[in-house]
Amino acid sequence: MSGATGAGVAVGIASTDAQKPGGGLSVFNIFPKMLIPVIIYAIVGYIVVFTNGGDVSAFLGDMAQFRAGACAEGASCAVGALNGALITIPLPNIQWAISTGDLILIVALIALFFEMVKSSGSGTSTLLNHGLSITVLLVCILLFLLVPIFASSVFFLIIMMALIDVAGGFTITAVAARRDLGT
Image 1 (tube, rainbow, N blue to C red):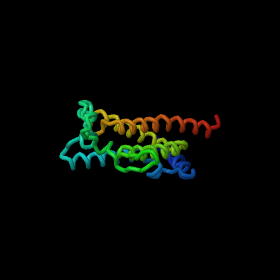
Image 2: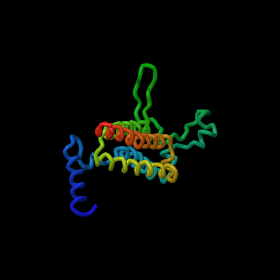
Image 3: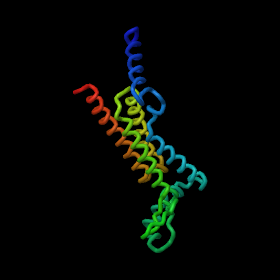
Image 4: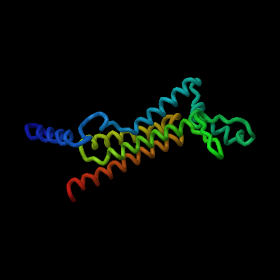
């Protein structure tokens, strides 16, 4: 798209996005919010692993010890920082233990909510956000498959939320675009 026509189309697209409420090509509109829980997971995980001499089981726990039956005999299992109780809230019947993984999943659900709300637009920033969301999903899948610290149920659920973000985002944007076009 070179020449006066191409430049006019680009200016028209940019001005259309800038006129929409909440539109525009700002960093907040483009930034994939599902990256936030991934970054939090990585920071917490690597801090725990590096402070324990590179031991991944300090973060994820030791399933071999659990499978060997050490937990059934009353011995303490290596639960790991991800699944260990971080906060305990007293309820009438029981003590509710909230783990680090639970808090990361809460952040991921909040990020997913904001992504779903944001995908109701059909502007350039929404399309750029979808492209970056696909990149986040692919990076998360690679991390899950290739890096041992990311091989957990908590991170798998974050991947599923990123998948919902991508699939739902494109679907919601397509429906919103059809509505805007009147078809």
